[in-house]
Length: 270
Length: 333
Image 1 (cartoon, rainbow over the protein chains, first blue to last red):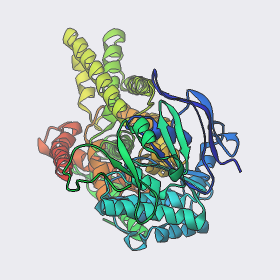
Image 2: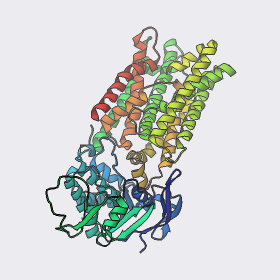
Image 3: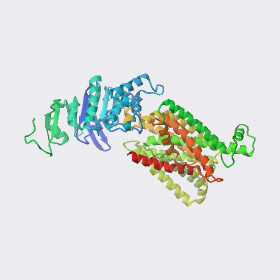
Image 4: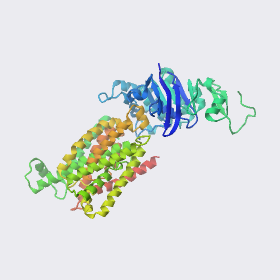
């Protein structure tokens, strides 16, 4: 009922405060995307929500209970996090990687169960990696590699999946491929997905809920079509732009001003 | 590489047979060549003759020590490489050899201790002390135990202890003579009691290391991923560091500093068994024992009738290997 929440959350690196008394509730069963300028603290916030970073003030709540006070293994069965550009050990196969996702379910007595096996097979199938299971992760293309890591988080079988810039270093086709995969997971299995994205237009297209971070707190949040405006982009990214609409999807489309070749004399079509 | 679990099991049994064969060779081969019949007789029914005495008091302890120390150093090396996520790491990075050497020199200089038994405990303490300092320094600060901080702190502490040792040796030549034998690193001339005293710690560390293997696999994927999977990473790192101190500290106590086993063997084991530490660590143990036994046997023949310290033989093997690994790493990037 509660899902993932931040209350009065303050985060800092050493002396420098990055996030200051932030309040946030992640809507359940939706795709939430954090946007903001470089260094605004959106990745830091994501890490804190995943208990990778200890707050200097306030709390992160999972289903109403403080995340820092619960056994970390129990959290790992309800919430998965994929950090930015993770590195697999040289030679690790896709299957070995995905199997690691079952770590939170293993104990001294129960090392590998049928349920573990089923979860791994499901994760490989959902990500379309079944045929690559025996290949080393480092021999895959960037997009497939990211799929393998997503498969690992899927094997964790959590309701909530957090991803820190899952499309970094991928070409456009692979970005769409990864985002489609996450969109499908949300649509078919109602998993709550929270991620940081840099591409504002893709964020508008895939997110049900957009959270814009500025000045160490939430500047605006809501449906992309309700909150995206020239003013928001100017305040959050310090950039002038025009907001149009995606001709296919109808979601907000941000066209930045700046220099470049101009082959159309008329002002943009709005 | 061995792919299936079945192949890996067969490989493990094969290596165990090779290890036993190498131990046997270590007992039989040397300046006074012993027939296998004599060796068996010496072990089962020792008649006190010179040949039997050599086998029971010289060759047998030597073979057992080489196997135990080689296995321990290789496992410690694999743990270090996992902890620091650095393929060129060795137990030396925790300042273990430097700390042991420093304590030995201090004890010999100020307390005139010269019994090998006492010195081995001193070495163990020095190793533990140096590793603790490295661990405390690298745990300080906001990020906790990062691989980079561990490597830097370890290198600095090792350099500090090494220079203190050198300084003291330069001022005290009497100590130099007594300590030099120990500092060269050798499995020869040690009594079985010396191994027996340290053996419980080594054996406990072997078991602990094998039990930790599954958690080391998770740690290898990086701190954030490991924490995300619900691992208490600092606990696992502390446990791994403690095991390294027991394994490498115990080894240095028995045999003095023997280099390169800890660096080389994990790479050989990885080539055979892959990256899963549940297989990798037992492979390391067997390969490490085999390598040190073979190096020690080689050490008897290089300058016959004199013997070369085995630490020099492992260095002769290790340096080209080290360069090969470093170059391959560069080529891969």
